[in-house]
Length: 166
Image (tube, rainbow, N blue to C red; front, side, top):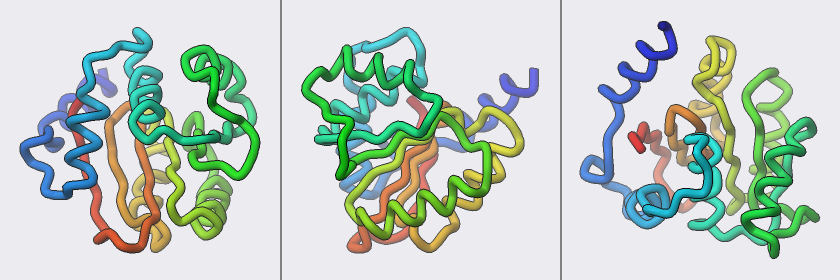
């Protein structure tokens, strides 16, 4: 019951494309997330696939333990590489504080990189780590989609946080 209540609270606070004033995020939402193509029945996986399709990375890094997701990505995007340097990183959830330092290191090395984090609203610990991440200096733009979240580091943008209903 708590997850249903949390999701309803998220939907109440979140916006759609009409409440977004960032051209970068507006294009991503309207052309990427709201794309009608359905890759998977899983909302989380479908969202991740739409991110891959929109941002078109050359290579993606998967945190250990996410081989099943990696294989599904390879099926949908056969030309995608899993060798460095990585344009995008996938984390299957937020479990430990050490992930934050790994993300900070990635942001420093790849300022135009993207991190997708699955299950950011899974439990209280995940939410706490997500809230620390969006306040971190290395995160410039964060997008909370309830099922997953995106982090961007490009210093030319203003620091903003978005909650978007999909």
